[in-house]
Image (cartoon, rainbow, N blue to C red; front, side):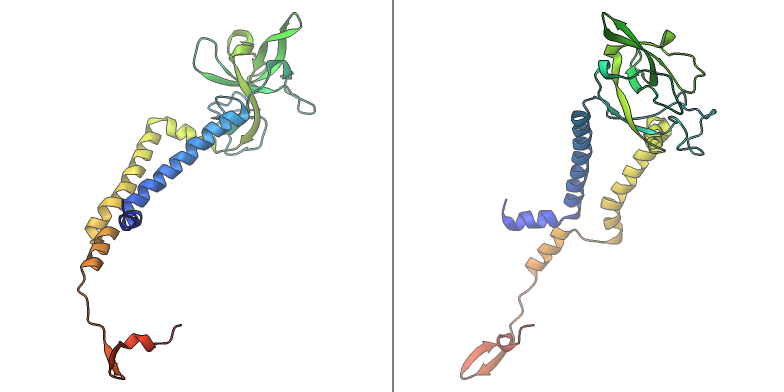
Length: 237
């Protein structure tokens, strides 16, 4: 491909849109997989979908975004953890509380976020945790009795961001998917259909018209018996 064709292609609005979309998608996927590598877990970020960890019941993240502990709609950052390093203890408002774990519910693909309140050991090695939600009134689980083998632990929560997780929760339901599809369709219409309606010409067509424009005779001045272009004596600015 010649340099001139490549230049016209780059100035084309549609081509720039495709490049921008590819660039954004690359950043998103790069950030996601980079986070998985950096935080050493397959789920570095999750949205909290229930209020079982909230001490303010009924759960109301919009009214009490910074109240203990986690709320529906929070975005949580998860870090991989060695089960032997997990600190287990009930919630303590005035002291150290146990680590908040994200784990896969045994026999299911569902992910649960609860606090580790007790270690289960065998031969001096942690083999499982007893977990419970801070807002569940001291009742362990799920699963039954709150017993979670270490192989089901995804990681521990190291940060929470109020409200942001609501975006992910909204996109999970059918209404959220419809909204995203509508936004994409609107962008496509603006990019491709609107120029046809308004008569806007693509950049490559403009270049072709410039190339086919008739050449005009250069004005000249008579000087010392020779014809010299008039612009030869114009000062530069």
